[in-house]
Image 1 (cartoon, rainbow, N blue to C red):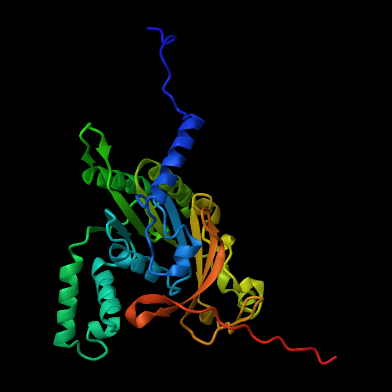
Image 2 (spheres, rainbow, N blue to C red):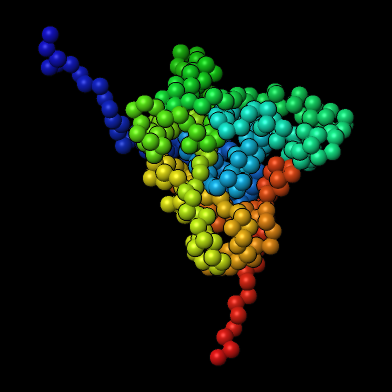
Length: 335
């Protein structure tokens, strides 16, 4: 049978539809019906669109022990209290850390005691503190948070997300499917399994970026993706005090081209004290605390690029804002 008269499937939208959707979105934002997810830090919210928007990919890159996992955990941990009235779930892909470990880190942040203490490795855990952990767990399990611990390929990841979105969907009175909004965290991108058809990790990251973009266009999701930095950030020349090389750059993200083009927000984290940098960057910010974290907002598609300073409270498994450190006084020439 001839297909000459068969109507082709439409693969485009008119400009009119785009403008209609944009005006509906702006009106929803204006009336408070559509909101970003507020994070615990005003500086973070201000750099982005008053928090993290839905249908976005947010990549946080840093070397080990730089605080990137703390940031993701704190965003999730405080999201329900900071965004009252918002109806959403959380799906965490925890390839690096056991769910048990993540839970203990949460207890640490809430009761202000170290992980070692909670495990009775730094003094014996008291009965009162154990009860506080029980009380917190009793409240926290009420929140709709689910965890995937087994590493998977990008294709398996897409299937899990699709199944999850449909499992938690509903139908309106007209029979149209309605998806629940979901924050999806990935800790971290390099721990995805390489599929047989993928040449290497860079190839896998390219596929991951494409998958994230495709999924955010279909479902009301927000991705928070943790990623490693290239090892050259630890090179001696990058650690020379007062140089531009102290700063985290877009190119420092492992497989930068793979994720950078897909990211709506890209944040690089540096902990200058790990490189024994006392005067950070050409502005020579004074780093007198080994817990100082510098967040470089390298790409903010709908916000502002900038650099902000935070302090890690590792014993409480959280980070807090801090004022911008003073700059080293420039020595006047004696000539």
